[in-house]
Image 1: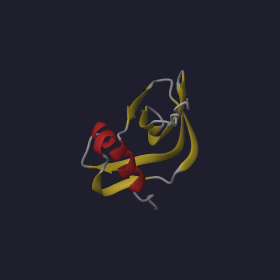
Image 2 (image 1 turned 180 degrees about the vertical axis):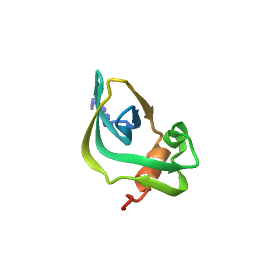
Image 3 (image 1 turned 135 degrees about the vertical axis):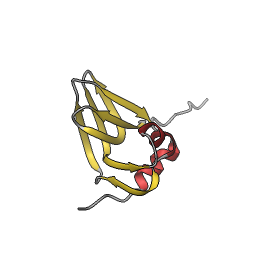
Image 4 (image 1 turned 45 degrees about the vertical axis):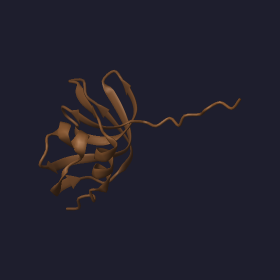
Amino acid sequence: MKKKTTKSRKPFVIVRAHTAGVHAGYLESRKGDTVTLSNSIRLWKWMGATLSQVATTGPSSGDNKFGFPILKTEIVSPQGFEIAYCTEVAMKAIQAVLPWKQ
């Protein structure tokens, strides 16, 4: 009998840290006061929603300002952080926002 293999998929999350701002990416690890994300994006500004709503439905269209994807980000926040797990819809909407250029 063949064993079923399940593909392990890291969750896509939004992390709000006291001093590091807001980032979205794949949660690699959380150890103490450090969160590591892969393929992360900094979220400077999002339209028409609370951060919880962005994690659920994605940002509204408009003047969203997101950074360029970064291969790996370590966020250290001794003050703590909020981690919001995103839906598939929200993840696709966040990743579809073009990086903001100054």
